[in-house]
Length: 259
Ligand code: LHQ
Image (tube, rainbow, N blue to C red; front, top):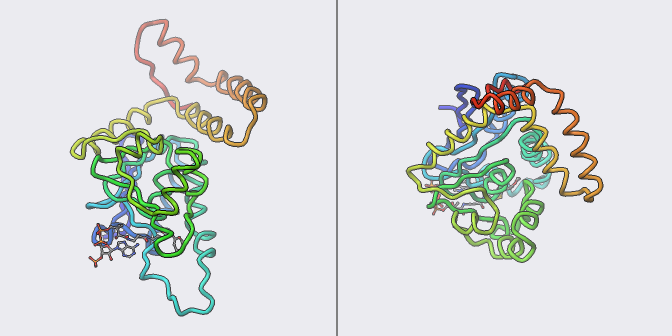
């Protein structure tokens, strides 16, 4: 079985991390499979939403710790980030389509921060988030030091990173780390429903909304108001805007094409 399962249905590409015996800890092969899938998601206009999840009882336990040779004098953990993890995080953020993450179980280390890189994160009530890094004397990566203070504030970011304790899905929702915590038996249904509803939406506009929201992290209000004006001007020229308004006026459901 491949270590990442890829399937596409009705505009939704689902990526399932698939090493359930090891809580889907990352090995080299997975990066290659994710790279290929991301290229398809980026280039195929028929794919209008991405859903990321894990097989079995875990979402992802981060880097597979047995894969690194600790006695290698040339050991360079930064190289793995440069080659694999960081490009994946960047591509998830930059994908001009919504990315839903269904955190089905523990999300630890890089696994936690990859989940937090997604646009809408749902988590099963029994799932948890663990900034495991400090336990093995590493710093949070995959954007952890960026997401945590921005989403949850410095105090909670510091607590999560220094103490490396599990944060329950309920706390993660309460702290604003994720969109929603849902009952375990409802997680995949809800996540699929959400991804399919997004895949039927105004895809180009969703991509533009992502850009605007993420740009606000470093923009002033003035810059953001200017950006909104430019983006509104641009999306206002698209077919989906005309369809949205026509559907509203005709009291019917819009039939968005994503363009
Ligand atoms: C694992 C792992 C794992 C291998 C569970 N590796 N086998 C680092 C370096 C390089 C560059 C890039 O960036 C990174 C980023 C990182 O991700 S560093 C952080 C790596 N992750 C961790 O430190 C988490 C390690 N795992 C755990 O602390 C626990 O497994 C958690 C808390 C996630 C789950 O605990 P349990 O529910 O008690 O499960 P378990 O520990 O029994 O794990 C089940 C199996 O999965 C077990 O294998 P086994 O053959 O004994 O049944 C674990 O060894 C294996 N596993 N995580 N990261």
